Image 1: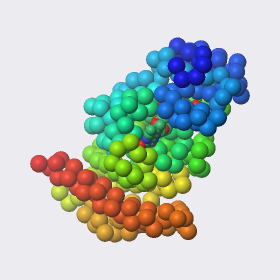
Image 2: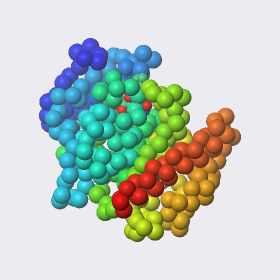
Image 3: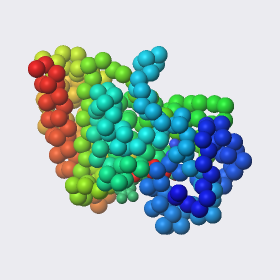
Image 4: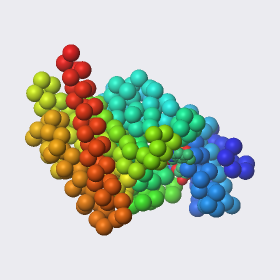
Amino acid sequence: MIYEDPLVPSTMQELQDMMAAHAGKFLLAAGGTDLFVKRRGGIGRGVILIDLSGIGDLRGISVRASDNCLEIGAMETMTSVSENPLVIRHARCLAEAASKVGSWQIRNRATIGGNTANASPAADTPSALASLGAEVILVSRGSERRIPAEDISKATGSSEIAPNEIISAFRIPLRENSVSAFGKIGLRSEVSIARLNLAVSAQVSDVMASQITNPRVFAGTLGIPARRCAIAEDVLVQNGFGACGEFCRALAELVDEAIPGRSTQAFKRSAIQALGEDVSSALLSRLKGAVM
Ligand SMILES: Cc1cc2nc3c(=O)[nH]c(=O)nc-3n(C[C@H](O)[C@H](O)[C@H](O)COP(=O)(O)OP(=O)(O)OC[C@H]3O[C@@H](n4cnc5c(N)ncnc54)[C@H](O)[C@@H]3O)c2cc1C
């Protein structure tokens, strides 16, 4: 139990009834790892907690053949996302991002839905979800809408999720011959919030020539949870994963555009280039693995 006497719905219908009955006076609780911290700062005291842990419909990881996508329930934990064979196979960068969140204790509680809903610019899974072209499924009473993962948060701590909505799941399109990788720099090697993260996915049209299409490059912790780098994507289309220097310079330009004049600009400028090298080298070795 996270707060005193939370309400614990066991179906989506019960949840929506509770949200309507307590409109404007409730907080949703998933794993509670962000809420605990907020509560220490006084946020959320005196409101009704609605604990999502009893709703089976918010869990599950499966391929939806009808929509050609991988669906991940919002209440799946970082541990289950990072270890799930379907995620590792179809959305490797997301499995890697989830595996790098906090400590194992945090990963056992922290959910993928909470990570997106919290809208922290330092969150790890939003950049991976954006690079995979994921959609966030938002449900409210009687309706459902979908938002691209990269559009869910455009400012620190604020999201497009309406007060009567809940994230029910994420849908990741299954793309043929796709590869992806995620990298993160934190203050320490473990249990650290990202100072910078980078997720890249692409489709490989010619493995031998390292020719790629539809690259999607997103960095986290540059003011918002997932910031796209179109110039780096152009470099990948023109040169594949081999032109590491140009790719890294494009990433450095993204830092200059995103956080000009900030005290962290110089650090992030050089850190993102190191991350760019790591991620490129992971992608190259995955390509080589594919032809062996
Ligand atoms: C020590 C520590 C280390 C951490 N390290 C990392 C890290 O390395 N990387 C990282 O990304 N994060 C990290 N975090 C942050 C946190 O663990 C994640 O953001 C986590 O994924 C949040 O999920 P949760 O289930 O705990 O959310 P909760 O704390 O339960 O909720 C967070 C917010 O999201 C809302 N919410 C939750 N689920 C939904 C939903 N389905 N629909 C709508 N709104 C919802 C809640 O109302 C709340 O406002 C760390 C936290 C701690 C305490």
